[in-house]
Length: 336
Image (cartoon, rainbow, N blue to C red; front, top):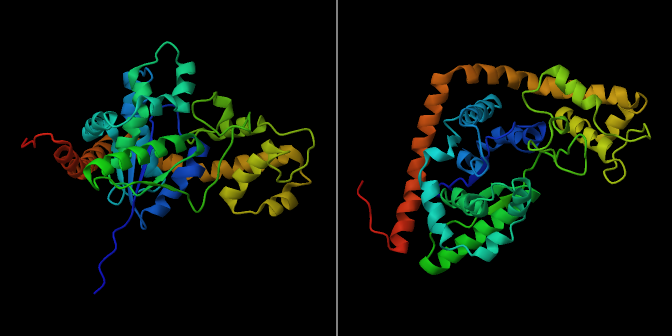
C-alpha cells in the first residue's frame, strides 16, 4: 500500500488594521476556500505586527474579530483551516527572539518596508518596526510552512525567512522547512481607484479602495469617481489605459467575462455605463458575504469558540517546532 502523502501547508498572515478591501478579496480571500481541500491552511490574524504602529486598544480588538468574521463569511471552515489570533500563540514571540539572534542588522536595514514605514511614522521608529520581518519569519517557520502567498511588497520578507531558515538548518540540522512562494492559479491584482499605478491598499485614503463591507451606495460612488482617461474607449491596455484596464480586470474576475466580451458589451455605453456595470458586479459579489458577516460578527459566543479552539490547535503545532528549536540551540527543556 502506498503511503499517504502529506498535504502541503500554506501560511498567510493579515494585519487587523484598516479594512479588508476588494483587492484583498480578489487577490486572496476569494481563493482561500479553494485551498482547503488541497492544502493544510493556516490563516493568522497578526495582531502583534499591528502594534508596531500605535493602535486604539478597543478598535484593535474589534478589528481582530472583524477579520475573523470575514474569513468565516467567505466560506472558510474553521475545522479545516486554522483561523487564529497571533498573540494567542506565545511561540510566535518566542521563536522571533531566537531568530533575532540569527538575523543580521544589515539584512534588516535593507528592508524597503521599514524605510517606508519609518517615513510615514517618523515619530515612532521603534525596534519592533525594525525587527518586524523576523517576527514574520517566525510566523512562517513555526508551522513548518511549505508555501506562502506573497505580493510584490512581501517578497523581501519571504526571502529573509528562507535565508534565516537555511542559516539555522546549516548550523543545527534540518529543523525548519524552507518555504516557497505560492502563486495562486486564479485571482488578480487590483489597483487603486485613484492611482492605478499602485496596488489597492487599505492603508491609503478611503476613496482609493472599495472595502468589503462598503454599502452599495458607497461602492457606486467610489466607482463613479474612479480614474479613467479622456478617450471614452473601453479596451484592455494596462500601459496606456491603466484605470480602464483595472476596472475591466475587476469585472472580468467577478463575472468570468473575457476582456473582449467586456469591450463588445460595454464599448458603446461609455465610461458611465461601464462603471455602473462594474459597481453592480461588485455589489452582487459582496452582498451574500456582507450578510453572513453580520451573522458571524453578532455571534460572540461562536467567535470565541473558534478563537479558542484554533489557538489550541495552533499551539500544538507551534509547540512541536519550538521544542525542537530549544533542544538544538541548547536551552534546557521545560516541563511546564
